[in-house]
Image (cartoon, rainbow, N blue to C red; front, side):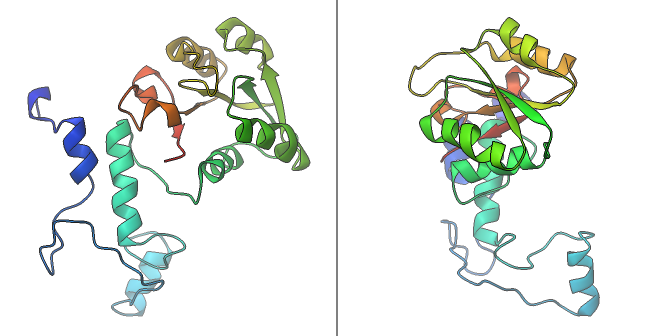
Length: 209
């Protein structure tokens, strides 16, 4: 599909990830309050739990309303998929816990939102994950901080509260040369409206939306 036929950002904000409700034709996203879902038969349930088939199992894992949100965020960011969390701090933790274990480290800019800084400074070391803070976002300094135990590099697309703009492409190249992913907090990037870190080489984008 050519670029001129791609939906614009404003359209994606309203409609990405959702078609009219097949039962009622409602245009707005229905709010599914159910915590659990019925399986067609035992074989259907087995396939869902084995992740051999897409479907709803339990709202703690996902439900149709959350599914629309996840698809919409992925569309706005130009990503492959998204996972919703209860907060931005939870999203950060999920991303890091998937990559690092006790004895590993991540390299992070010091230009961070205060809640993120405290999570990295206090909470992660309690679990054995060290955070090597780089003063600023100079790509050369970030490269120097990476070692054999580094599992990710972490920056913010637009720093909070300094409003600094790091060179995402240069930092992504450094991370990838070391064989580790670049995680970018794009909260100030307005959900892909001001900047899409994935287009600049980021591997994982997190938000407080």
